[in-house]
Length: 152
Image (cartoon, rainbow, N blue to C red; front, side):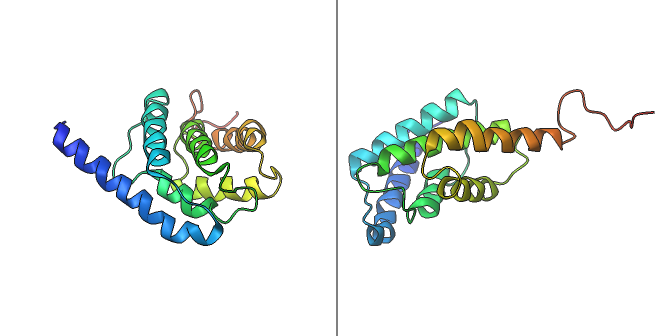
């Protein structure tokens, strides 16, 4: 791809993330330019590690708006929490075999994060989402070895 195109996309994305501060500031949360650059690097690394490609808008904006009013996120842990949520999101998009939309996965993550996880990212990733993804895989026909034949 053309480097000028990538730079323009990157700048537009940075502006969009900075603009999210207008909304999140009512919850006492703001991202600095450095936070945004670090989150974008994290995004690229996550996508590469999970062997994913993202077209259009980054999922990061959706995570920001979905989680900004959580009682378990404050300014001190905001950027770090977003980075981890982004990592967890991409991992479980793969683990759920893409049977969920981004919004469905984010909604589940948010509900679990605030309820049974009580703000624990480790519990969200290692327990709640692991179980959720296992249930999705067991109910899909995409799963390797699954066939349409019923037990005879």
